[in-house]
Image (cartoon, rainbow, N blue to C red):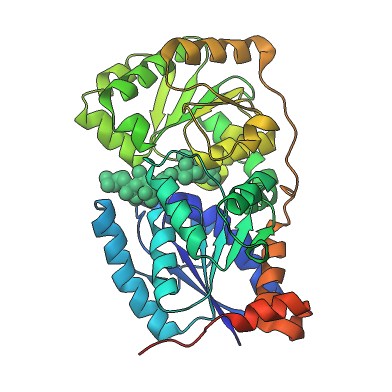
Length: 388
Ligand code: UD1
Ligand code: UDP
């Protein structure tokens, strides 16, 4: 049986791989190996998602852990190379834009193993952001660029990616959301936090540009303190933000407002329950911008640019940057009932995982899976032999 090797490592990878993994398993025509790099390792940043998303434990865990970019990516590559040499997969599948994504793509490319990139084509055009570098390089190397929205297709075309490599499959992250929403809404998450539906805001922050810069982080926390004076704000604190808050001596500021509740990161289902019933979400997360659009919940994004412009063009997202007055003003608008309304973008319909699974079969099984002449050509043109 031909083999797909999935590489994941960080929180936003797990809800993207789950629907694809399940779809391939149900179809039963390709074998799968799930590799976890260990980029994220806290239970609340990793293990909880395997339970919440009904993913089996990883077949291989590399335990790479944290470190500066070169060191972390390098350690992943050393270990992933060994895994790929031993496993000899027919396709390596990577998701999103984290260091585990790029490490997987680089290793596969050097071993001449075809690469699929789930969530290809997103661009913030901010070259200083590590995620943008990961996106650019991974797409350059990918044989299958699987895009969540048509703007991503256009970005790839502009960069000279051939049409045959671009596949608009829709948003796989929203598959997980739609599968889990009902179960999430039945959880006692709100009552445990003594919150009422529509009576609170949720905030997440972890981008390097926001939390590593003491001036920006202070400003953002000051804005949150003001918002928390008007509505309770639940802030599950990402480990990077937690560390920065401590290092920058901002813990006291954050503790100042009674309405601002700093808590540990939530599991997938609890967080979905919270966001789905929130009055307002403030975030710098990529994925949360999409989820709020899918849920129809107003989102204020604490950044100046987004790689997910469709959430602004069609969804509930407003880019508010990091200016305190602007953030507080926009939050007040939402609280006064003028939150942005939107529609759910094309192919954010819960079937992206199935579309990708079908594409993988056509790519790897060719005629057997009913591939067209062009797809068969693409499949046989790819070198599959491994050196060594
Ligand atoms: C990474 C991704 C970012 C993504 C985010 C999702 C890269 C370059 N960045 O950022 O794109 O949005 O994940 O959450 O891949 N830490 C812990 N426990 C953990 C994981 C991390 O304490 O389980 C702490 C460590 O101090 C670590 C720091 O968080 O040094 C940063 O972790 P890292 O994975 O390097 O980057 P993130 O900021 O999490
Ligand atoms: N998320 C979660 N618990 C939290 C915060 C976020 O389960 O406390 C989920 C969120 O629903 C989304 C994903 O984590 O599915 C987004 O990951 P993150 O914000 O860490 O990364 P980004 O999308 O910015 O790369």
